[in-house]
Amino acid sequence: MPARLIDGKAAAAHLIDRVSLAVAHLVTEQRLQPGLAVVLVGDDPASEVYVRNKARQTVAAGMRSFEHRLPASTSQAELLALVRRLNADPAVHGILVQLPLPPQLDEGEVIEAIDPAKDVDGFHPINVGRLSIGAPALVPCTPYGCSLLIREVLPEPAGLHAVVVGRSNIVGKPMAQLLLAMHCTVTIAHSRTRDLPAFARSADILVAAVGRPQMVRGDWIKPGACVIDVGINRVPADEPGKTRLVGDVAFAEAVEVAGAITPVPGGVGPMTIACLLRNTVIAACRQHRLPEPADL
Ligand code: NDP
Image (cartoon, rainbow, N blue to C red; front, side, top):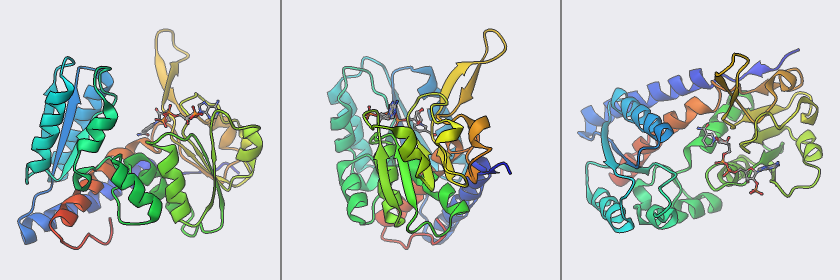
């Protein structure tokens, strides 16, 4: 029997509905309108699309959106000065600096300059550390979205073996921390892992965050496993000159073996912005010492 499809679009829409209700409540009961500032340096077309989408969805959820577009020639000092202004601005509860930055800029220094309380990407070392010790943290959006999708199909994942392929700071490592917090037994695999297919085959939960089109084959998957495909890869389509998106998992093969699987597109992707909006509301509540909405 083919795997159950995990519908990230629907899950993201439900989360955004809950975020919008929480925002409406904050505005009417607390006179608090959460605000998200997004900083884009340079004119990378993909980043431009992400930033526009984030701004549109932020406003649609009832929050304030502040967009800061800086030229590709921006200096480190100019970018740090903007981050400091946003740290000090009481209307801004979340700050996101769109990555990657142009090569002359030091990403690590910029991330560390963001007030950890406003770090809605969850990349600041303080939030990374808090996540790892199980303290309240702002958690990176993509892996947090994956954890929500896993819970949809596996409400009680304690004791299951989770294998995360990829160890980036943005996806793989925080994903592994979240799975550990869900009481899974966690293996992190990467480019130096020996016999990756054997590790993958032992996974009850397999998360692929690699960036290699369709690398995970059907015969790498344990029958009935939950497969979360984070990969977004553009490959040539059948029609000449056209491209299409595929994940890191060979979907047509995997869907015949897995118990549940996220499609690409329509799986993990839509959860990322939904979790960013969720993080902004959580950040606003914490900054104002208000209770966090229970359903976020
Ligand atoms: P990175 O390039 O930062 O990390 C890739 C990881 O995969 C590395 O840890 C690397 O190992 C590992 N890897 C590379 N090749 C292999 C291999 N042959 N076997 C095993 N492991 C390998 O990527 P990201 O984590 O940023 O992103 C991963 C994927 O997720 C990409 O396709 C990206 O587009 C997508 N993505 C999707 C998002 C969304 O849905 N919104 C958000 C973020 C990312 P090593 O460390 O040893 O080099």
